[in-house]
Length: 155
Image 1 (cartoon, rainbow, N blue to C red):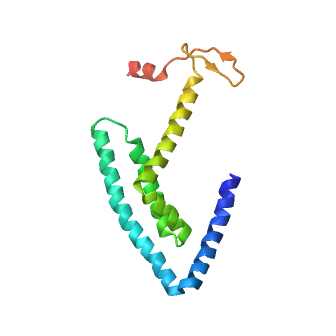
Image 2 (image 1 turned 90 degrees about the vertical axis):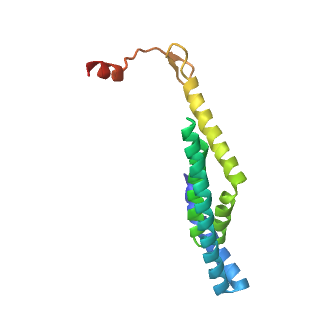
Image 3 (image 1 turned 180 degrees about the horizontal axis):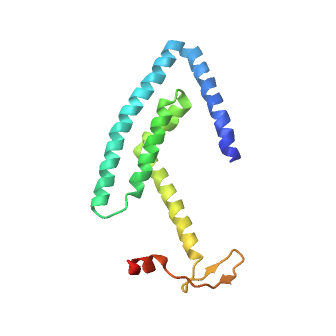
């Protein structure tokens, strides 16, 4: 939480410092034109790559597979779009990196591996007879009934 707060405070300061420095080197109007150019170019690239990602997701759905990777890539493309629309060169660099398919796919793969491993670790706490282990390694026994099955039988 503290890291997010630090980033939230430092990011605009760094962006402003860089914009002022670049503006003093190449001129104010040129800097503004460069910011607008990256926004326009970025939005066009995101539209194209977003459409390609959506087509890949639709193909996976037709094949009966879960388009998890494509969903993450779509989220990253949306974040890249926000980064490219925000005035500044640091955000443009982040958005530009997310537009590179290899970088985006590797980030998506890392997120998927972390998500799957967290889900596997959560399910590893359950043993074969349905009891769960707490953090001290003790076993809790219990019984359950499926309320959904009872509701379906009543209907």
